[in-house]
Amino acid sequence: MKPEQLSELAALKAVGALDIREADAAQNLLNQAGAKTRAEAVRLEEAAALMAVAQSPARKPSPSLKGKILARVGAGARPPAQNPFFFVGRNEGEWQTLPVPGVRVKDLSVDARRGTSVKLYELAAGARFPGHHHSGPEECYVLAGDFHVEGRVLHGGDFHHAEGESDHEESFTEHGCTLLVMVTTADYN
Image 1 (spheres, one colour):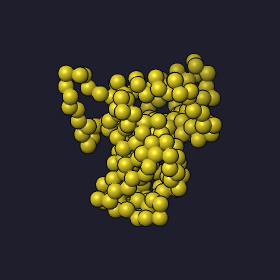
Image 2 (cartoon, helix red, strand yellow; image 1 turned 90 degrees about the vertical axis):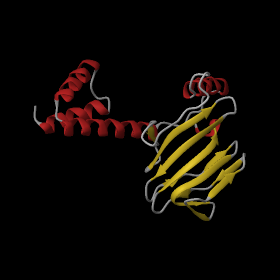
Image 3 (cartoon, one colour; image 1 turned 90 degrees about the horizontal axis):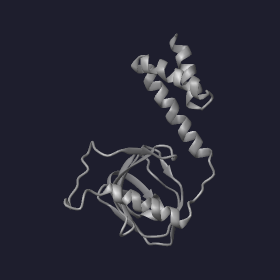
Image 4 (tube, one colour; image 1 turned 120 degrees about the vertical axis):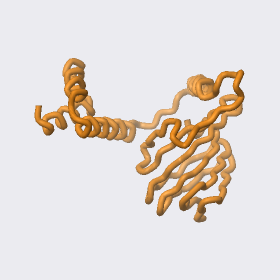
């Protein structure tokens, strides 16, 4: 099969235009394809997933369901009780790409008991984070780069606190930045 045909097949698979049998056959062909074609198929599937998220209406789970989910996430994020210490190395943990262009996040720690989460954010140059509401406090420490928030420009070593029940306007970076953020899990998970 020609690379162009494989690319078309990967695109159809990514948007869900194939039935189960066709999707399985396409996956088998892609598994045998070269690294470049496989990488393109992964990019297409990621783009299709982001488009689906962007087009889906925002739905909040019921408070009881959200609490159950957060409790499970929190239980899975902590090491066994016999070891009170855990670490996330620079190349460890899973980066998640957000539906906000140029923004990705890595969960470092979730404390379901306190209802808090520590996250590492990377914003690419020009990334803009939409305005949002905080039901609980947010602590934001700029590790590197520039971060424009509430009319101020923060740089590496600067800190920002937002009280609970506050509303952030759009924040952004001109040249890119890395942020360490502690938030209420109800606001960010």
